Length: 169
Image 1 (cartoon, rainbow, N blue to C red):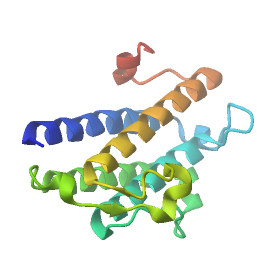
Image 2: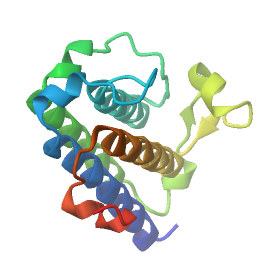
Image 3: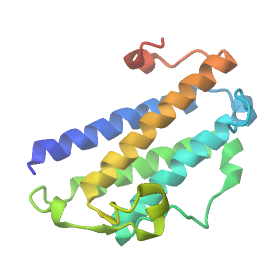
Image 4: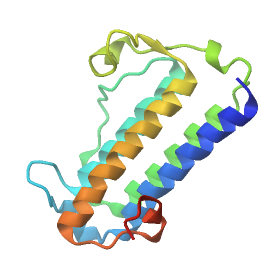
């Protein structure tokens, strides 16, 4: 693995992270408790869930085990825009810092145990490396960008300017 590939992966994650952050910034606080699509949860729940997955991934990078079954889920964040935004940003910065510190030549040799989350990842993914964790986070953020786009349309909310990337501005 060369350094530029690792840097590109981090920049892609930052790009998608910024789309998520700008989404939260553009939503009025009262919308956090709105559920514009039947049975799909609130805006606040969407953002809190994204944060929870980021936290799972940061724990995986730090501790060597990916476990999606968190006991510290804080549902009060779902209605606290400022704290939610601050945590989303700080966790993303920390993830990028950790991965940036890896030796690009050895990053694929480090393995993270995924057996606690095998239900979600499948039997072929009992272990992944940090690059795969970055890909997992990025894919998860892109998925939620799609969900947020549906939420925005259903609620009649204007998209943030940086969503021009998806042709939605």
